[in-house]
Amino acid sequence: NCAMRVRIALAEKKLQWTSHLIDLSKGEQRTKEYLGINPNGVVPTLVDEGVVIIDSTDIIDYLDATYEPNSLRPDTEAEQQAMYDWMHMARDNHLSIKTYMYYQLGVTGLSEAVLAEYRKNQTYDKALLEFHEHRSQHGFSQTDIDTATAVLNDCFAKMDARLKDHDWLAGDDFSLADITWIPQLVVLNKAGYPFAQYRHFECWKNAVMARPSFKQAVTDWLKLGHSENHNN
Image (tube, rainbow, N blue to C red; front, side, top):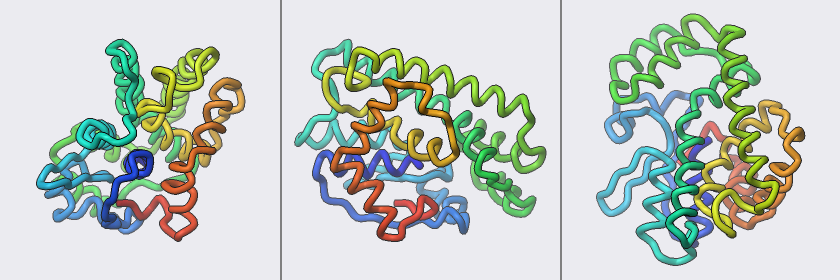
C-alpha cells in the first residue's frame, strides 16, 4: 500500500527513520488513538520534528523538499508540474484502485460494529467513509467493478503512451512521479490486473523493480515478515 511510497523515497534519499508498525489486519489504523494522529485512518503518517503529514504523496514531496541529498524531482518547472500531475492522478483515483483490488482479492467489508465505530471517529474524509460504508453494507456491483476498471485502464493507457518515448514519467530521471505509482503496481499485480497489455509500462515496471530502493523498501521489507498488513 501507500507506505511503500515513503519507504522508497527514504531509501532513495538515504535518510534514517524509525518505523512504528500499524497492524491493518487488526484495524489498528481505525483506533481512536491513531485517528487522533491521522484522521483519515490510513497509513502511513509522518512525524518529523513536530511536523505531522497524513497523506503519502504529501509526505514524499515534503521529504524531497526538506532534505537535499538525491533530489527526486525534475529540473524544469514544466517537468515538475508534469510530476505533480502524475502524483495527483494516482491519489485522486485511489478509491477505484481499492475497489478493483478488494473485489479481485475477495476482501470482506467491515462488520456493523466496526463500521459504526469507524463512522464515529473518522470525520475527515467523507469519500473514504462512504466507500467503506458502501462496500460493507452492499458489496461491489458489476457497475462498480466496470467503472473502477475503466478508470484504471485509462490511467495505465496514459502511462503507456508517455513511456513509449521516455524511460520515466516526468523528466529524464526517476522521480516522485514514478514512486507514487509503485504501490499501484504492486497491489494491482497481486490482484491480477493485466499489465502485460501495456508493453511500455512493462519496461518501466522492470526498471522500477531493478532499483535498489525497491529491493530495500518492498522486497526485503516483505522478506522480513512485514506483510502489507503491517505498515509504518
